[in-house]
Length: 334
Ligand code: CA
Image 1 (tube, rainbow, N blue to C red):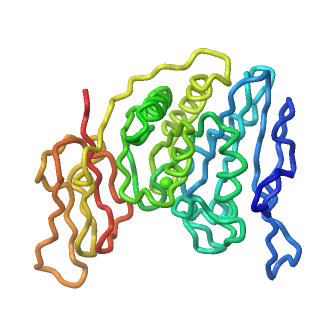
Image 2: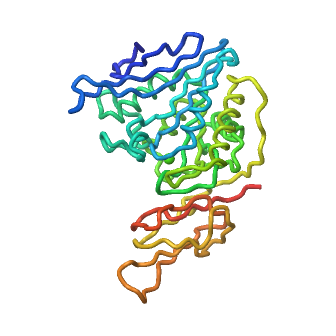
Image 3: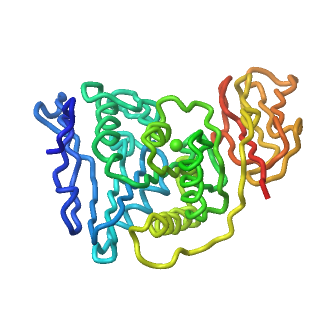
């Protein structure tokens, strides 16, 4: 039992501190029609080697993003605590009900884990998960790596990212860890919606935080999983817990200087991309058109780029709704 005040209903089935390798669960009481005294059993792996720092790695924060969970599962399988200086805590299915549903948000309570931090010990299930991880696991960590991709509705150029933070020392630590990941792109990310993010909550505790966007569309590719596996290993080496040499890879630095990076659809309809991910775009250039579905002979909505840069993300499905983010432009910094 982990002593938290106020108490959390979540309890790990394994010791998180003793040396060695353990695979177990975070057990969360979940009384429901199918099981009156049931529990949600969220898989967790802990490996503790010689004394040293702790890295917490999470995937499946959104349940329809696959690179992170796949990299974590593979890493957990071959994990040798003898090779660790410190501890890794691996949570491949952070929002477990969402992962099992292949959905962004939890089907249990409809909550988006990455918009509900700090969570609440007496809240709905997703809020209880957020609260436990933030109060019981993050304080043990020197570095947190939270894997994301675009999910079913977005697709990204693969990148690792940190945020611009007011604490210059923390900003530098986060940026260095993102760089260490060695994704094809390293982004200083400007969030459109920072409230309730795991990112913001971890950074507020002064813990080094790295996130990623490694693809999307609700599936993955061999190349994208390879980027995730390399990045995971590189960040663990950078964090001082894993022995070995990092695997370098070319990485282009990108910035997001303002919210003009984001382009939204004003109308709904059929999405016609005019440029693909990675393409260079100019401010005002049409990056996509949205065709109305109710008649022919009507001009499409034009979606322009808000600034010069390259297309870093796009809406994935073929249909859009008014207000959907259609494109994200990031700006090369070298
Ligand atoms: Ca995500």
